[in-house]
Image (cartoon, rainbow, N blue to C red; front, side, top):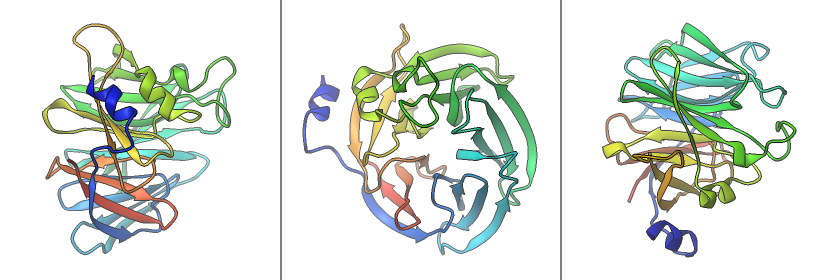
Length: 253
């Protein structure tokens, strides 16, 4: 299988950096809409112009209420964000909808406890796809480690439709952390990032069974954290460089 070959090879297909922008909030992840990108840092989200890099709006939330906003996705005219109580346990999660232009809170949905720590979610095929992380160390719960990470499919009202585990090859690359970001791309490809490695994983949902299918590993110019697929051009990947507080736009192979 090509996935096995790619995992064992030093030469991976690579996303090529196109541009990068300075963004002080680029510590957890990034999302990209048609004209704006959004830099995310726990309790702060800033909206930037995709052409000039100029900051257009900022939301500074109460860190007690929103302690760990890990990622967001642009869905229609809303910014849909994954919030959790990381690193507190037991893990609890919620979804927060913001106006994509003003960054005003529109609504929230409490997911409670059970699956894990929500790190990302996206909308596709009339469903919410939400990833729940588990960790070996900080933020982990007794009896479960990174191998308990799950992708859960919900209907529009957040009723569970299905749950999927990640392939062993990908879980080994997550260790000791988990999946930090994910987004749907062109032709139903699911792109997922880990916490540290400079690579993303292109996955497919199986027609039968409960284990996601690894199609390829793609090298990236940045190390882990939450990612976004451009809403205007699905060949463009958005990621962050935490060390330099930069948002990076790359072209997928």
